[in-house]
Image (cartoon, rainbow over all chains, first blue to last red; front, top):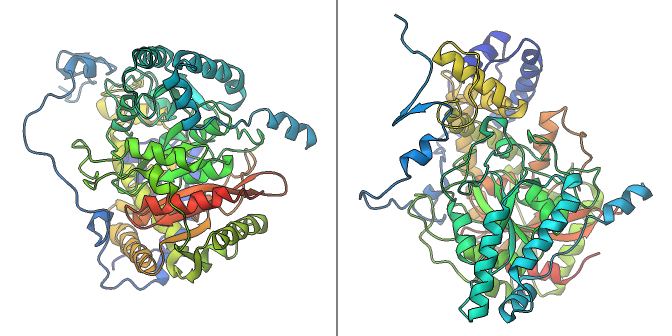
Length: 107
Length: 489
């Protein structure tokens, strides 16, 4: 099953994960976050006690027999959606139909 | 303590029942506009200390109240919630009103649409008073993670109201609303209802549309009501439940008249008591109160029998892996592009994302995003996320087996009564354990009702959690009514 749940998170890993999540941890935040994540991961490692070989993962309870039932998709028909101007005016910066962001490509 | 208890008393007030209020409004004896004004007056007095409301929606409320009074004067048919003052957790959107989810990252956002549950309440005549405080993005068990300050428990203002829907629970307990809406992902309706001594409902997954709910963990999130009594909570659920084309997970099953269901006697129902919920970690005073509740059910003619849910102890690890993984994906949308504040000091797009998120998110939200991102990242996915989903199936199947033998399962809603402000803020894991009796039903998708069931010696409310199988809310309401009727001290 690949890597077991015994891994200890290192400072480098916390920083890598923060980067993946577009978060930034200040030098003051990092030790506390490291301590908390390791405590939580130690705690969740008790799942290793359970043999789950052959058990199908359950992502959503609508998959369960006798559950609340199946998801119902709406008919694939065009219907009016939110008025664009009411949506755009919530953005910090926009221009017409576009959201403005800092420059992406350096010349 | 005696001084505290005395000042705390003045915050608790039981709202009138829907039946009483509605009789006044339909007869014209009570004007909806006066009722709304009275509530705003009480909010003005009590909210500064309790911090249950974040934003008031007075203009919209008074317009709606005037509409109800007009209709009543003309003798037009009135909705079941005509003129009833209701509060909305700030994770559900209301057109034009602030919607922050308790976070700085959504400060200033005014969504251009109504959540389905909100729109349904208003169509039934409800007067929407305002938006209620909660843990940031519904992540927390005490409402201390709100960026807008903690909510205080009306029963004892030195204590937390529970969370994440702490504002919704406190508002009903202090009569700052007749009823409220909350959301429950791992216990966020049931645990605060228990801490504040009110009724809270976890509807079956899919029973109530989540359109317009700011998502935390989509395979777990539910919208549900709080009220001061079981029958009123049941009435609210009938209003907000039902299929919604805008939420593909909402169930097409017909919506029963839950209030009528709750009127049926509980006699003859088979009630399961799982030993795993009465083990180490349960406060003895909470246990004693719940045992009185179980005795009351026996007296009401229920057949009480033991059931076994042996995987219960794995529920917290499963919950925190699945919920944080889903949260890390759901909260990716908060990046300073489409809504909320944007960090000023960014030269590049990547910096702008990172700085906006850094400035906008609180510590618990970051912790959960990091945990979830870690559990989903290359190399760890199988060990953490898939394993958690496998155990989730075991937990769900365990419940389905139990419900083949019993109609409902009763447990304590939380292992303790309300704890003190600041008591658990330094230890995230200790805070997570406050959800130990509620997360299993969240993972299994089943429904439940928490109902006041006595108090501790210090007078703090204890809640009994009544769980029932998928779409069997009616049964849970019947059992909860029987516990309520026993008036356990």
